Length: 506
Ligand SMILES: Cc1cc2nc3c(=O)[nH]c(=O)nc-3n(C[C@H](O)[C@H](O)[C@H](O)COP(=O)(O)OP(=O)(O)OC[C@H]3O[C@@H](n4cnc5c(N)ncnc54)[C@H](O)[C@@H]3O)c2cc1C
Image (cartoon, rainbow, N blue to C red; front, top):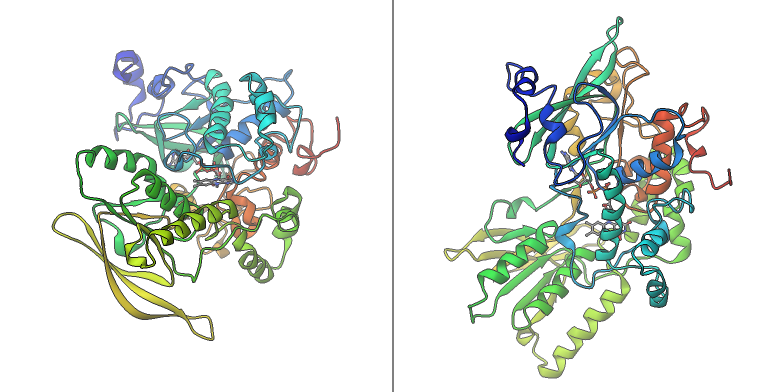
């Protein structure tokens, strides 16, 4: 339904400032619900909690709130603002056959409370697939099934009217101040992705959980036919449609050496068996991710305390050492699959230039340009490591392809833009950086922000909270920690944040 069709004239009159920003936003309470229940909170009220982004991190907070706050007291007013039109988890990388890289037991509830109704096992049970899943004998569901689990969880909060989709949050500023001039609430502004209209909501506590921003190397930015891995699924569907009557085999380049790069390399090769696919990697070979049991302990929730309290220099070295568990590495099963496929090409020809798919090792893209026919010319340089481990470029070569996919990672700094108005509230020695405490709350200057208000950051704290910060591993426990940090006294515990995540029976 179009928003204008349901906004009453009174709503419209009362809700617009002279700057065109809708503050009371009757609009928000009715817009972008995509068939979900109307929002449960009134547009004029100051919310107890507003979460920016409704990915797994925020969903885990919603679940922890549901599971841990006493049902007897009035429940806090909570709203989740999500820019996507509906719940979706890395939709651009939902590839056929893609598997989870984490045990289903690390779902959004089990590690905190295995009796929660939001466990993956209860999801399977409710879908009538528990026995068949058991027969699969796996801890690693497909990515498609895990997304369906997440959607199933999200549906609960959609029905409760706690989620507004199509809301791209652009900024947070001080909402109200007390007599001492300290901030007591925040004003969050979002742009409707369908109408472009700006709306605002006020909240005492704000959580920023917006995930990562895709990074395309600068030399390829702005070129046609270059896309980031996060856009792969929709881009490839468009390409399939565009080339369906073409007889010329396509030429693809994939840049990157991590799981997404390997998955896209494999997918393109399977999807277009006659095409030429080149995987460009800096290293001498693809490397396996280490998910062996001892190493996996670095993702345990009880590791975060130790990591957070570590000396920053030692912590940075430890993080660098453990990066191979998650970055620039590929699951062994996929490596074995790719190796076997590459090997089979040798049966047909011993000449690598005849192979449909190839991995170009020790290469980096030096420059990129667009050809007249919209294909992309990549200038590749040979990468060599000298004795000090420094990369040097050797021989150069040109590779012309029809499409490039860069699986070159994500930057987790979107909060800096969203919170830019709040840098003036940071302590003077903060260098305008948003530091967080162990409980993920932003460290503000205590003379400028009242204790009754706060901002929490999720998923951008790898440097202080460890490698699990950007992953699913600790979300169940972390969601509980957030609830305890924000609503500690309401959840019946004044004590440490970890009490909600504790494994002791009630
Ligand atoms: C392809 C892929 C597979 C992965 N598989 C695994 C895995 O198997 N195991 C694992 O542990 N980790 C995995 N990860 C890591 C991944 O980061 C986590 O799975 C998880 O998505 C983190 O949740 P999040 O809520 O912090 O971030 P996200 O999932 O990125 O969610 C953030 C949400 O915020 C929304 N948002 C962003 N900006 C705004 C804004 N301004 N206003 C409103 N909404 C906004 C986004 O649309 C998104 O819905 C994978 C990552 C990728 C890319």
